[in-house]
Image 1 (tube, rainbow, N blue to C red):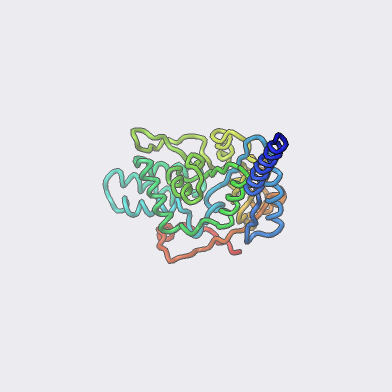
Image 2: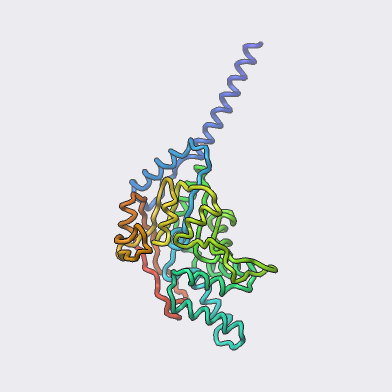
Length: 315
């Protein structure tokens, strides 16, 4: 009787162990990403398998425009700002409309990657509620950009989740403009999507920025300030992501890296004298391409207002 009871216990424990082992194995199995080379897939799989035994927090961080979804022909944030301006404020003489259009004029005629540019986008939306800004971003996403998320990047994020890695998104676009549609499309919690923040007062956004701003070196500061941990995987697509990517203690991952423009400014730091592609090749980053072309017969206010289109990437 005792022997039979003991045998049943052993069998029960064996079944529990087998089920638990099967669950862990299944939950941490790499799924090949179609469209990327065997070399890229092998590097990703080897890295992710090496994280299985990690006990500490596992963090990944990604830029948004150009890294997770397409930016051709124009950035979603720009199109949302310019289209809303044309519809709401253009050709009006009230003080609010004149102020908003003066900001648009600065944006159209200035540096579209500088600090003042991202600040002007915050100033432009000041006075609206967070919910109103979220709806604007979501509407333009569904109207014109819904097909722009890269399928390969979605598969990559799914693999990271399989291995228990946190996914964070940093963008130099207004936070409320992007949080809703990025969260819904990728299944990432809203509080892990960090953009340019502004103070909210009496239920409405203001033109007062909250620092650090997730642009250029500010992206690295944003990781340290809000995420509060060193990431093991960081992905970007441009010079503006260099400092953020160099925060990674593991994989540095670059999408559609430019290999034409040689960086010449002292502000480019260690990238000076290199293209984005040649710099990250030297640094041993994983480099991939995702198709990003102009698709659909959409009317872009950005084009109408003579904003330079972004460069296409063919696979």
